Amino acid sequence: MQKPMANVVAKSSRIKLDIKVNYYKHMEEVKDKSLPTLIIGLQEAKKSISDFDILIKEYQSQNLWWTFSKTERGVDYQDDIIDFCNKVINNIVNEVTYEYVNLYECTYYKIKNILRYLLSNDNKVCYNDNNSFLFIYSKKYKKIWGFSLSTLRFYGIKETNIDKIINNIKNAEFINNFSRIPSKIKKTVGDKLHYNIVLYDYFG
Image (cartoon, rainbow, N blue to C red; front, top):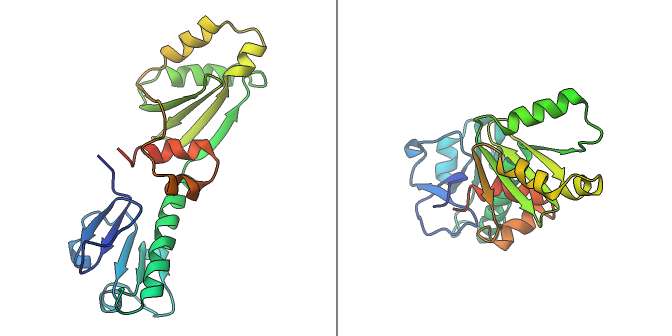
């Protein structure tokens, strides 16, 4: 089941977006205002946005965006919906930081903390990229750590020991592939593989 990324306030629920959204007819009906909300239609925008200016489409301090309806101004309508989807996706992935961890340059203290985290009860999302690179994502800390398995092998760490470390990661959900994420969404975030790990949760 897909997880909503945003809200849309519009008279019609037949509006097609590349992301999963909650549809509402009026701003007063919106339940989760922590999600970015796109208002479609000039009159609803005027009514719902504080200090409304017809020349301004984004009100980030209010977590609101707006555009004309398709009948009011079709070109703006199409372009603004695409722009809104792209911004929602980029905002989600940019909230998460990424760190490549070179274990051979880490201090003993840092390695100890990493191992402690891997065995912690924190929920983790993991992706093993062709058995050459391991990504570990913590939703709690909004952070992804990347570990080169190939480098570990190069320095003589046995395959059985690498497998043991991976298999002992506690509370881990392992992603097999990213096929459930639409190709159009993947293009939005570019070739940074760790972004797909963040988006995976939204495309169940």
